[in-house]
Image (cartoon, rainbow, N blue to C red; front, side, top):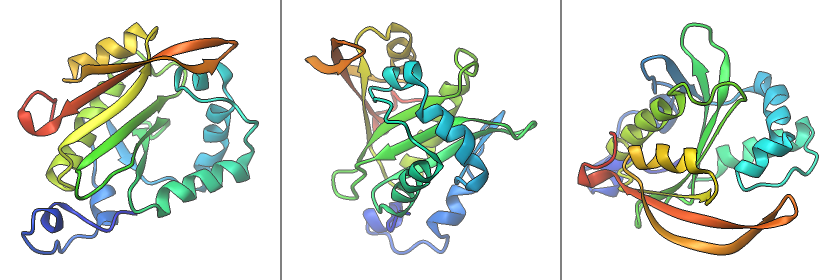
Length: 200
């Protein structure tokens, strides 16, 4: 849960709308972003135990159960410098993944992006829509000016998608992650929301 917003960061006063209320109003054309609830634990636990998927997310499967997943969600929810949304289709109301922003700071005004779609939801424009609406929210409501991320250097599809959204490469960690028995290069990317390049 965040304890600051654009009005507080820019010194324009206090907002009359709570962060929780604003988060529940985030909607795109075909999807909505909502807080997590207990019904999400089974499919989120399955995602966290998907070895191939976690490898693409630069993570390692540690055999998470529902309780570990709950603790992870609670940690994200109670941290004043992070946000996590469940991605859900508007019409069918079926969860399609999650998007999270961590290391958020009201002074430096940047956030680190992480997004995970369920298998089968990729390549349909959902990720682009999710990031478009969340970037708009982060910029207009929370005064976040810059988004950063890390992505596998061999994940050309993801890199192209990020570049279309306005991200640029700003560095490489060489032989940085040891996943699936080999060392991986990690590309660093950044996107300034305030310069008009990002899709907000």
